[in-house]
Image 1 (cartoon, rainbow, N blue to C red):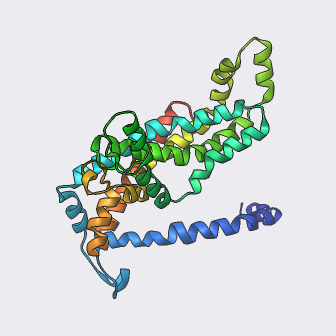
Image 2 (cartoon, one colour; image 1 turned 45 degrees about the vertical axis):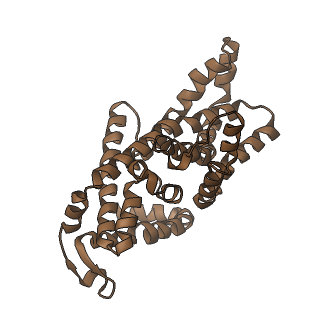
Image 3 (cartoon, helix red, strand yellow; image 1 turned 90 degrees about the vertical axis):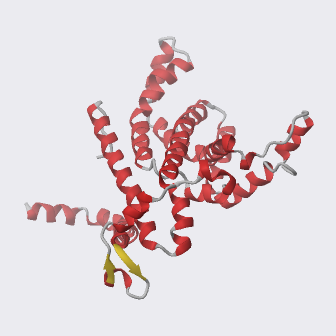
Length: 302
C-alpha cells in the first residue's frame, strides 16, 4: 500500500510541486493563526504572550452574552446578512444569464468589465462617495429631490433607509464579481443542448429555464452553502465606514460593536471570544445546510 502511494507520488511529483506553494500559504495564513483562539480563554497580556497568560475559562463568553446590547447587535447582524442574501444572491445569477445572452463580444466584455470593477474599489472610497452623494445639503440625490419639489432626505441617519443603503451598495460592488463564477459555469454547458432546444422550437427564455439554470444548479447550491456559513459576517468594513451613532440601533453589528467596545478598551479576549462565537455558529449552519443539500440529492461541499 505504501509502495503504491510512493510510486504515484514519484510519478506525479511535478503536480505535487505545483500545489506546494498554495499548501504552504494555507498553512501559514489559515491554520497557524488558529492557535490565537486560545486568547478567548485567557487573560491575554502582551508582555507574557499567549502561552504564558493566565487561563480564565469561559469568562469572556459570559461577559459577551451578558452585555445588554448583545441581542440587538446579533439581531442587526442577522437582519443585514439576510437582506444581503435575499437581494444580493440572485442578482449575480441574473447578471450572468443576461451577459451570456449578449452576442456582440465587445459590448459584452465592456459590460462585464464595468460590472466587476467596483469589486476592487475600497469600502473607504465607496463609503465616502455614498456620504457625498446622499448628503442632505450638497448631495446630488437630494438636489434632484429638491428640484422635484420635495424636502431633502437624511439618508445616512434614517434608520428606515440605512440598511437598504448597505444592501444596495454591497450589491453594486459585488454583483459583477460574483457573476464571473456563474459565467464560467455557463460556458461549460454543452452547446448542442441549445441547438437541440432551438430545433424543438424553444425560445431563449425556455432555453434559459430548461438548460442554463439546471446547468447552474450545482454552482448555485455550493455558493449558497458558503454564504450560509458566513451568515454572521454582515460586512465589518462597510458598516464601520458608513454608519454613525444615529443608526447604531439598526446598523451596529457584532464586528463593529466588538471593535468599539473590545478593541477600544484593549480587551483582546473579548474580541476573540466574539470571533470564535461567530465561527462556531457559521460552522454549525454550514454543516446543517450541507447535510440538507445532500439529503435533497445534491453533492454539497463535503
